[in-house]
Every structure is written in C-alpha cells, then in structure tokens.
Amino acid sequence: MEVNKNLSDKAKQDLELVKKAKKGDQAAYTAIMTRYREPIYYLCFKMIRNESDAEDLSIEAFEKAFKKLDQYTPQFAFSTWLFRIATNHCIDFIRKKKLKTTSIDEAIEDDKGGSYKIQVGGGTKDPEEKFIEKQKIKLMREIVTKLDEPYQTLVELRYFKELSYEEIADERDIPLGTVKAQLFRARALLSELIRKSKSSI
Image (cartoon, rainbow, N blue to C red; front, side):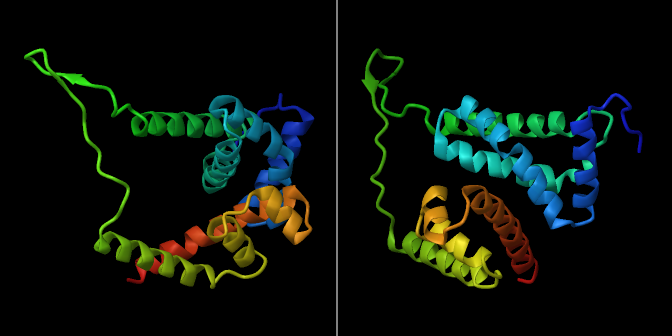
C-alpha cells in the first residue's frame, strides 16, 4: 500500500487511526469520529440547512466511510476521502428529497385547455397496512433487545421515544459527543443484527 509522502502530520495521524480501525479497534473509530464529527456536521448542515437532518446525515456518512475503510488508500488524506463521502451522501439525500417533494398541488393542463389537480388520498392507513406496520415495530423492538447496554437504551431513547441528541445527553448525563459516537456504534450493531435476522429467515 503506497503512502503519499507529502501527507501532513495530521493526515499521518489519521492514517494510523485508520489502520487500527481496520483491525477492529473501537477506540480508533471513536477517535476518528471525535476528530471529524463537527466538520462533517457543518458540511452537511451547509448543504441541507436543517439541523436534525444534518445530524443524521453526518452519522450516516461515518457509517458509510467505516464500512468502506478497506477502499481507502493513503495516496491522499483520509479527511479528503471522508468529506467526499459525506458530500455525496448529502447530494443523494437532496435528490431523494426533491423527488419526494415534487409539487402535487399544481394544476395540470390537458390538451383541451382544461386543468385538473391530482387528488391525493388521506394519510389514513387501511387495517392491513396498520397490522404490517405494527409487526415491523414489534420485530424491530425484539432485535433492539439483543443489543448490549448502553446501546439498547440509546436506540430506544432516540428512535422509539424520539428524543434529540441533546435530550439524551441530559437524561443520561453524558457528553453530547459520547451520545453521537455511541449511537453511531449502536446503529452499526443494529444493522448487523438485522442483516443476520434476514439471512436466517
């Protein structure tokens, strides 16, 4: 693996952390997140202009990066590679959001000069849809119980009780950065449990 000799001292430190992370060193993962959490968040916020979305997107960007660590080559700085992943992730989010928010209220003209509007049904779900949703929630809760602490509690607070990162930090009396780092790890563990549960079906 060829290393760029012109890497800065900071980039060389990143490279050492990446090497440790590739070997499964959890402290290295946390150190990388601590180092780049705020810059990645501000990058996402600058692109999305929504604090909550930027929080989620920044954590998801780390998830993507950590899953692709084997693809990183030290011919250029790790930070450059990480920021590119975050940028592309935000661009994907923007594209998907634009598709979802295409106006359905505007009148559409027909070829006879008349116009009509698309009528969208109400948000009520039929009994079958409600049943399926309940089953999904039940299954997810069962999978979450397989997580060790503190990950199980953090997932419940964030996704079942829908508390913000700040509210979780207050309730658990731990630093905000720790909440974000542990939630990232919890989501990674949860993804693995879901993957295993699907493969066993």
